[in-house]
Image (cartoon, rainbow, N blue to C red; front, top):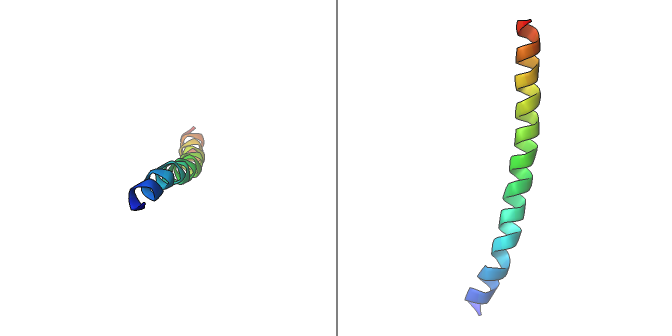
Length: 40
């Protein structure tokens, strides 16, 4: 029983991590773009 619930939880966890990484990457790209823009 516990094993089955774990298997169901994995995709949810992966989706949440992907969402968080996507958000972080967007912010990171904005920061990099601003730094590059200030250099010019």
